Length: 120
Length: 107
Image (cartoon, rainbow over all chains, first blue to last red; front, side, top):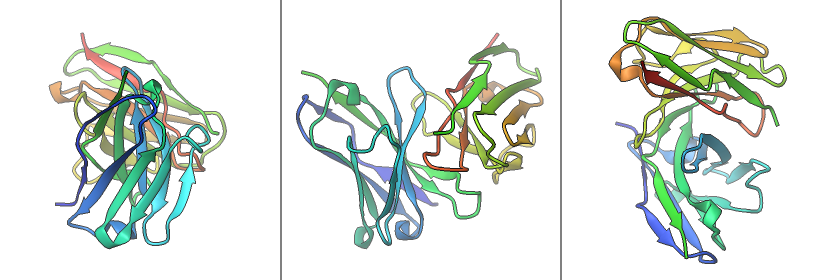
């Protein structure tokens, strides 16, 4: 079964750095765009950006440009989302998702989500 | 950015009811629209792409219509497992924005 497996929940303090991961299972992650989606507490889904692991082609939402870095390591079929200095407002669940090659680019496979909690 | 506005934001219905959710785009997006179902504590589930094509395995009680700026998701006969939040997403241009969501609750 095709899966995206995300790293576990994180609890951090403001100002700390963080890198969370998303690994493809049963398919070659490098051949599909991987996107990241934020869900803040009690709020809806927000598209953050996408990366193609094969060539690192990356697109960011203007909301998140400069706030996070999306990267990938195709050799280990893993995508990453990282912060250099976390804020309390980064508290959210972060999902990675695979952009389908056949479904007009929709996200057909989703990771289980990584909860990030930032508080002092 | 293309804005997507869903209506209603909240919907209360009973098992067996027919419900329709609308998604309006701030500019034309052809048929580049997807729908997802999201339950608390779970990953979102992909339902529909290209505005009206059901993803593999999605029950036929779900259907989607529309093109341009107005789209609908209809559930023909609500089942207990359908109570969730539904999101539309445009795939016409970056950033691939989502609607704000429609929470479907049991009446």
